[in-house]
Image (cartoon, rainbow, N blue to C red; front, side, top):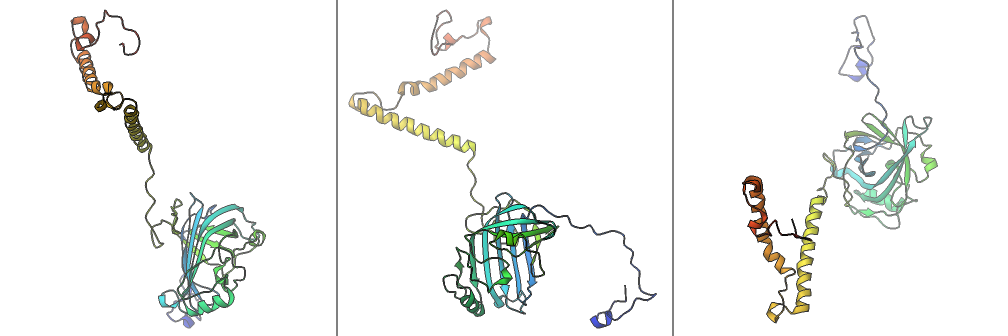
Length: 337
């Protein structure tokens, strides 16, 4: 290595001499292995496009539901991504994705053929220049206004003013692209509504590179268009807790009890007029419910005496001493012990 300098022109003019330091390699960098999925949360750091604009955003994909979410902010030429007053436009997209095998290595090495099915696609012009460009070249069956979001429910085939998005503008039709996922880096080729065209398109220097921020592949996507994820991406509360089997049993028990008592009371009242009308009480099986506490008490006392007291062989208690029939009495049918 040549001598280092704080001046670019000076540093690049040095020659290697005998006094130049020699660096010895102790470890070889391991090449990242290709991945067979695109799930996770990826951040697009501030990236300068080929026409001088700057773009940053996020791409999120769930392996559990095969859903994806994407947003990006485009800044005006030469402004970078720090000045929030220099935004050009913003867009959001959400839908579902599928992987249709590996791409041909001659097209994209270790790539995956991806199908995106956007169900939500919106765009907001953030500058008057964006409003003018969209109204001139990308009307999409309407007009654009500053800071006003439009949800595009169909692909705008006439929209050619936004090549830096690298995808068709709008939703309603599947789009296709090739992804390349190496290590923490994820890239996509230009997407197209034509699968043959998309699966033969190579990566170019204009295709942005996302960086993995979280390898969580079980991200929850609620119905409001934003995923539940930690970190810089927009997050919302998770859906309510699912009903468990115990909850279902308790609900069924209460419903059955309500139907039994209310329905039985109505039937008894219609048949007999109730006890106030000279008939039987309206409570269904009232004799059983009146005797139930005593039966439970007798059963507990008998069981306790049998298990913990003196047994019958020693002259201990029998069922007859608790109000039941004597053992010499033969009982047949329901209720006999």
